[in-house]
Image (cartoon, rainbow, N blue to C red; front, side, top):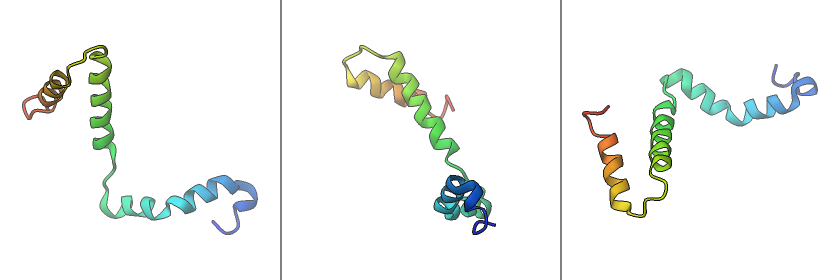
Length: 72
């Protein structure tokens, strides 16, 4: 259907074709990038909460405490 559908769904077909190996890999391994996206969002939140602080070491310690095994 990917070969017949470009007339109607041109851009969608191109996107699916570009990402087909990744889509197929999900069904093989059942893994997603959701965990990494969650970690990135948590880091961004901590950065926003600490806006204005100039000490990188405090930011580093805050990240280490947020991701310690006790807080997960």
